Image 1 (cartoon, helix red, strand yellow):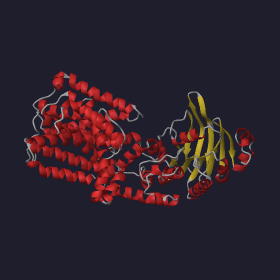
Image 2 (tube, helix red, strand yellow):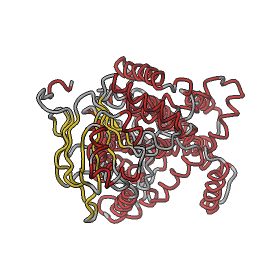
Image 3 (cartoon, chains in turn green, yellow):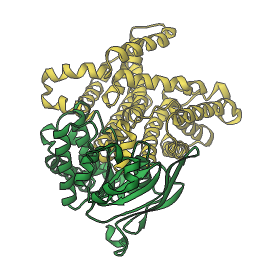
Image 4 (tube, chains in turn yellow, cyan):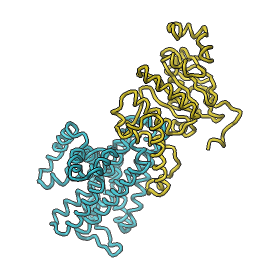
Length: 264
Length: 319
């Protein structure tokens, strides 16, 4: 579907001069970076650097004051979040958002169903097309739950899961959309070492499955380990970009952020 | 559970000929309010929007259909679709403005909308008859060989409308659209980011809810034989909200149970009319404190034990 509008020459994700002010405070200041298809890119920086705001601007949570976001050449600026999701971008949230009263399986089914083309009347009358959409969503949900290791919890109520499991479920919901680009907002927050390790492996597997990943994360060692490239923000501006080795050696990064983390 | 409701309505229909005129009157009133509660049940329980202007939709349908009959001499059956179209158009118009807004704006605008409609009904003397309202509203004209001039036949009409509305809403809440409503209710932000168009879905919920409320409104005039603006004040909307919460929010059987509990039971026990608001307040507090799932939430485990096997459990998860 997206092939039609794909500009083969354009970068996969192109963020250009993105700027957002909140009551005069510049949260994101002319941030530009590109992501190639199949990369894992980390967005790091000290607290208040504008990482999550950048995510929110890309995914349409609020409008930018200036700049543009393009996915395969298609301009996303000004679209609503559900429209951006339809363009192939899924995201997770800090603090693991799920649909608390629904079962784990139903949570993922929502993600699998929402974007399927189906008219209101066909849906309401429950004909073959409507049944197919629901059946496909059930299958997709089973696939994704098996893939994320949540299959045994399928019938549990999402709100009763542990934080780590809810976080994983957030990723599963996003994956159910079959996105081309997945934005993960602090996927390792609140996880212990083993859980982080497992989640990091999953991020790699997601990339290996053909989904490009951009993640915001505080856990710098994990980011260094799994990311192909890293973009460093400080006080709303991009101060460095490159491979983990390059970023680690970058003087301004050391000053702004990494200097305090000797082992990083 | 939904099947239980339909079986209950069927039994009621079979039982009706044996009942007294007073019982039929009371049951008709209860079923009429069940339709209104059902309309609120969809909006509040599934889409998660509380609407204190819901009674205005009932009023618009009641007045438009009755005025077409009284002033232009239309039959009930010709006036009904026009009145319903007007209601849905009003819902679409006010909804397309308010549904873009987040938080309390929807509640406030709908509250204002409800009051504006009531004030128009009360003050547009030449057309609506002002505070006195409309009188001598006749039963629906015979159609397809069926007459509705007796209490019993009108009761059956209301019963059929309620049963069909319930069936339509059962299909709706099981459809993708219904499940998107629930996703919105559970977490609006997450729903939007997985691709649920919020304004569109809220607008759909409001229009369908207004349509069902309009069905109730159509039957109101012929049933009561009089219409007055005060029947459609915010208190009527609050009544619907209370029925949904007391009966069980997020279910379709709940609103019906709520209507039985708040219309049939008090009337049957001949409570003084002025005691009703107090009773409703107390009931609301008791239910929210001790039965967060409403009466239906208290009944479900019982039904399950009575041999519902997996059915009741599955239903509970759906809700």
